[in-house]
Length: 285
Image (cartoon, rainbow, N blue to C red; front, side, top):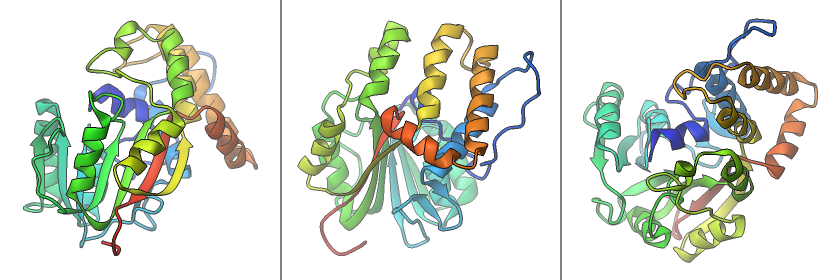
């Protein structure tokens, strides 16, 4: 998975940093990627991601030392590292050699001898049948030529009862981005298809998996990226008043007494991503 895709998802490798970034007051304040990502991660935690108290990668996906996790399209390794810090055996997979070269030493530092990092396009995956108790595949299916083939591979590597965490960009916000993003955003190796809400669930069911939850999150990121393209700033240093004001506005919304409920309503209408928690038939792995 591309670095752009993982940034779009709004998840970071340092999952412990869940507090919103403090910003300078006044119209001259500057937004940076750390501030937006910090708030985006806080927003994600409120939606069920990276639950440190229960060691759940996402609600319904607990991670422990007995788990074998395969993270397909690992990107910067946020999910892989979360699982590694819970003692799981982790295999990180990505199509980009540079991504794998970057994540391998990080995993080795956390769980030496209990990790692997592989380059693969997931068609097929270089892994044996029924090897994983947890399969993670976030923001990948919109990139691949044959999503059903990738889903078949994900199904194959899961043990009976394995739990799956799957996400794709939401179709409504993708159509929003299509209006404002450069054409390359919807060209290979970036997004080559928009996956409908029902279509996503049908892909998962068609593979043989049982859907346990189908939800969504990320209104904050849908708006942030819609503004980002207008600002014409560099992704590595997206300093612009419009982006900063949006970060401050969303912080203020979340701080309201009913901020979480309001966020949930907006997430349902214009989420960044669809999320499916699924299970392979069989006893719990």
